[in-house]
Length: 60
Image (cartoon, rainbow, N blue to C red; front, top):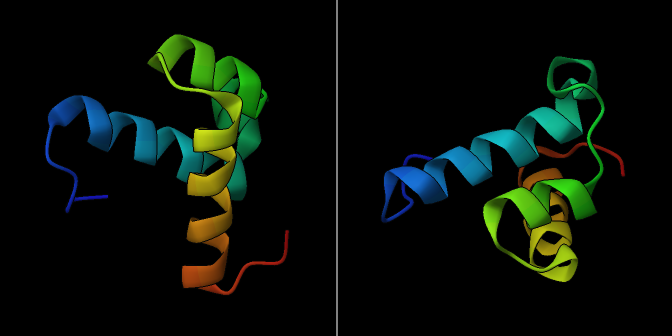
């Protein structure tokens, strides 16, 4: 997350991480909702989630 170029990108990455680890903390928002709020496609946010899961070893 901290490697992101901007504060906004860090926020998106942090939200995706919460989606993967503790969705209850973000009122169980979907990846589509996260992408809409962040101005990104569902596919882009889904890719972030998959990358986070692969990096951390979390099951999808």
